[in-house]
Length: 177
View 1 (tube, one colour):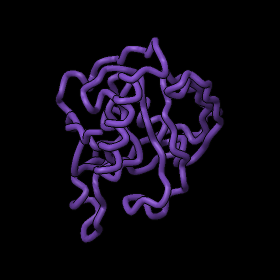
View 2 (tube, helix red, strand yellow; view 1 turned 180 degrees about the vertical axis):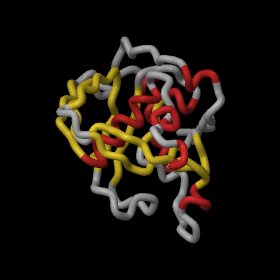
View 3 (cartoon, rainbow, N blue to C red; view 1 turned 120 degrees about the vertical axis):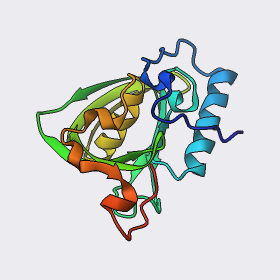
């Protein structure tokens, strides 16, 4: 359908808590998801949340197959996740480098739960219920943070580990998330 403009850090809508979806399998919801897919694909992203394209609804999509931006990342199945709930499994925290389409040109070392249970619905109202770990858990946490008005820099414990990608990783071609 349409590649939408991605809002950048500083836009007030990115700091709001998104509203839940109340009607599934509607033309409006399918159009939103298609726009999100087109936008994520055009930017080679691992995921995107509806608030990032200016829609304050609890919808995220994510998935990583063979992605040039994540050559070493484990594959994450393409998922449409609506009205998600996240529950950490255990206390193990892992730090990893993250970027964001809404924070272009920057990376930060972000602590996230290593293992996670998440649940929600797909666009048709079917239940999703998964136990995940590693990169999959990181991607879900990052995208779902957007639904609560949280951008990854807000989670960085040590701001000396946050900066412009070309400075932190000189000579490496690491695109924005």
